[in-house]
Image (cartoon, rainbow, N blue to C red; front, side, top):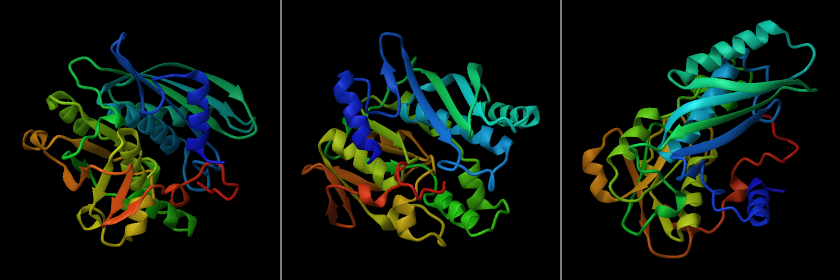
Amino acid sequence: MREKELIKTIKSVLNSEYIGDDCAYLSDLGITYSQDSLVEDVHFSLKFTDAYMLGYKTAMVNISDICASGAKPLYMTVSLSLPCNIGKEFVKSFYEGVKSACGDVKVVGGDITGSGKIYISASIIGSAKGRRISSRSNAKAGYKVIVSGEHGSSAKGLELLLSGKTELNKFTKAHLMPQARVDFSEMIAKLAREDYAMTDSSDGLADACMQIAKASGVTISIDTSKIPHDASVDIQTVLYGGEDYELVAVVPEGLLKNISGYTIIGEVIRGESGLMIDNVFFSDIDDKIFNHFKEENER
């Protein structure tokens, strides 16, 4: 069973035009909305993280979804389901982490219940005012593929944690305390004069490009030699590792002269829907990316 298959099933049942991007853009209200969940022993382990870092990451992954839409993150709700052995000190530290990550984003509510493991669910609202909102279906032939930051660092961090190297360094911090690209998102959304596509790399850089290619009905061609990454991280990890929360944008070339802080890694070409990596075409990469429903998952 794969997550994308379930999403397709849900979308077909609901017949909703809002399902498919990182956020639902509710144009009549001028907002974007998203919800994300973190499950103990699927997305995190208390062997590697503490309550503060868990709260911090909870906020950041949700803020990143809003950033992927181009909207301004404004309001968040956080719900916790906790085992009976979790006390108020854990909750206090968790919300201190949330508060630290949120900055100007206001936490306005949530819920708390009991459970066998820790389950976290957060919802977030962003404002579309003064911004052009992205859609994965907006990529067009001739557009350039640009990215923020380095890729593969979070997956490298997870690899180190699983091997017993739990000290906080560049890689483990990238995994445990990611940074949403608020400024990069704002710059593109405010300066764009044409439609563009944008998503984050939470499920991996290659998957982000593939999702845009499929939604837009185009081929996205990328050159792995252009992808920014630490020299110690192998290219498979760079492409498929995930949880970097960098932004991947597919934009008109004319926009590039007005923005900064990006790296061009490829372009959009006409052709079959799919991803071309170093001139090798892929119509599907689902077997290479993280699957929430595999029993052996240890995130």
